[in-house]
Length: 241
Image 1 (cartoon, rainbow, N blue to C red):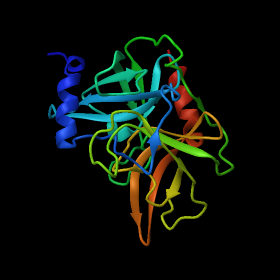
Image 2 (image 1 turned 90 degrees about the vertical axis):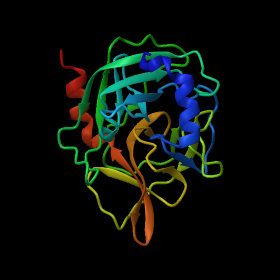
Image 3 (image 1 turned 180 degrees about the vertical axis):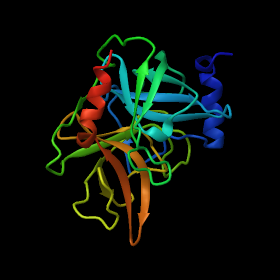
Image 4 (image 1 turned 90 degrees about the horizontal axis):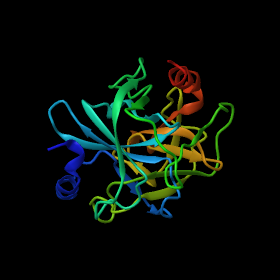
């Protein structure tokens, strides 16, 4: 049975077993349906045949951004989603090529960034559109939101619709990491929510969800890869023939 034809079974299994990489939106609320048309869900088949899920976001009609630790043997990109259960009518495209950052370190999580080139080009609609990438790296963005599917703190089961939460980024942290933003506290992504965008100052992607609730005593942080620091790398791959 093809990977993308197992959606119903996988949703039921994952709801029961909790094998989801999209993580938790802690303290969040349901997003307005299709208000985040750049959001995509990645359905991945690992090398041991385990199925996992990550988030990502559309940046062109051919490329998706996600976290490098979401790399898998096979990946399908589901676009135009809001509710997951019951299974929606959706557009699903296989990934042609995964391009993790060459300096990604799986132990430290540094440079946790990956581009996915799709097998076919996306036709944009009201519910499927790319997001702009931030180019400024000289300031701390304000009015930020992170979105994702996955568990909620209260129910510990797969969310049936896209969730989102407002975040304030920390100015100073006890966990310095190059090329990253941090949000402080329990609210936000947790246990992954991997690959989703940190959207600030309107609909502009400033970061990529890397690690949730990173422990840096005496505080907890969520870590976001800083898109402006990698913009040249991203553009170089988008323009390759």
